[in-house]
Length: 90
Image (cartoon, rainbow, N blue to C red):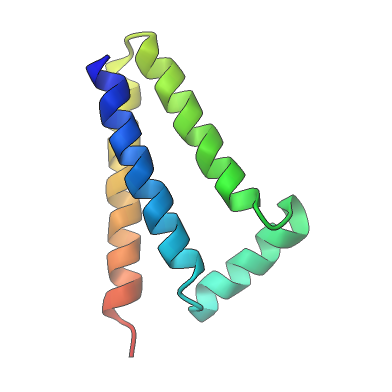
């Protein structure tokens, strides 16, 4: 149960960072958003984010500690990307 809670908290952080990046209007993000919109529709990146969260929670429910570790590393990588994006904004 603790694994699922940790992943849930990381999921909230990931969705928050995801939304902040999409709303940043950074040229790199705008180009990526355009590509995703063509391939997956306007909410495609959110759908992928949700499936990653759901898969991590399913694996954590099965008792796989590696799911928690990998999803936590993914959250740290997202945090680093958001920090780089917003710290270099002029």
